[in-house]
Length: 461
Image (cartoon, rainbow, N blue to C red; front, side, top):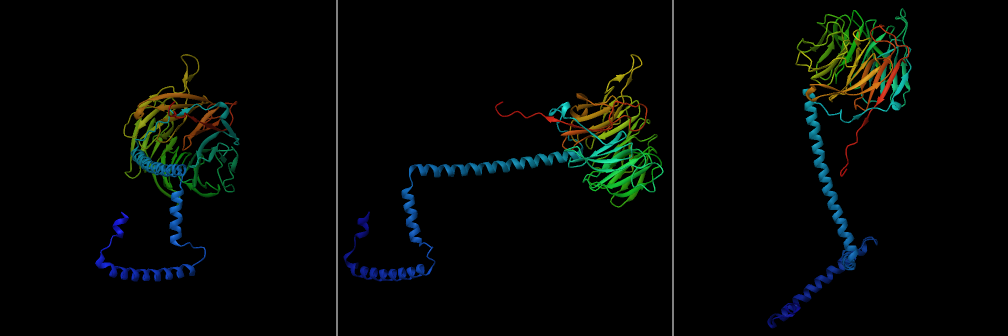
């Protein structure tokens, strides 16, 4: 190929050489200027021509082993990019799954399959927190699952730390007759509620009063008066500061806690209301005690739905999701409901068995119920001292017993943590609403019941 470049035509030789000399002179002049510019720069800089030569030398000096190493690094980089792309796709799938769950939750159709994961707790891991002088009647767990508040017949409220079981704060109870001097309850506390952001704590007592507390500092903020009998149930509408209160005066009242304002009163029950619950929608559900009804109150529509199915006093109720609820009665039965059907979807008679001689036996009362929100797991407690865990069949069409957790005393209150990693039971020597029996061996306190989860099978196992 070099021969092609050195072949010349005789007639253009002189002209060509003159042009070459001229071009060479111009190039030489440019090189001198370039050298001057380079010398005027920092000594640490390297001329581009030098870098190019060094790079070429490095390429020439690359060994076979170094080439393999370089190619391996490039391959690993490619794999990393592919993995990042895959994770991005999975992230999109997770977001889509969460959005779908949110839609089902709003419609009240979300039923996470939790029952197949929960294992029975180890008896040695169940902790008893003691500090109340009277039976524990009610409890609420903070949204972050770090603390629990308990109320008692000794008129006191205690804030506990879940992790170490220590008292964080105690609001002491006062004696009857010192209401003017004591800030707090002077009668049996029957119910409690916590706003969904953990800011406000509400507590109600036999003295017809509702106290509002700062949940962080336990300082009293306000006191609501208006009920004409014992306040037996409290519930905050999720995501708001609207508070629903139920009373033995057969009414439900609606309050705005942030503005310390009363809103309205709802009538309908024919006997003492014993329990109340609510979620995100502007409505609440109540258990009507001996009037034998469960009611759904639609606040905006100013209407109510009436349900019947128990044969005794309906003492407790809890929403599982926006469309389904569970209730318990002193006839020993446990019932699952849909808010659009007037009869129970499922009913378990003698859920905790019975006691007494044959032919004269009586069922153990169901005194407390709880639900792991938007799942297929519910819990019930009784004066037999046992907590029973149940699985709800698909579409809440049935109840299947999973296992029993033996405790001692009246189980007056139950609540699952938001993660369903543990269950808290409020226990006492007496039923929260009366003194029909007294179980002397029982301890007044809180049981922290942790659950274990089944490990998902690993690949190849």
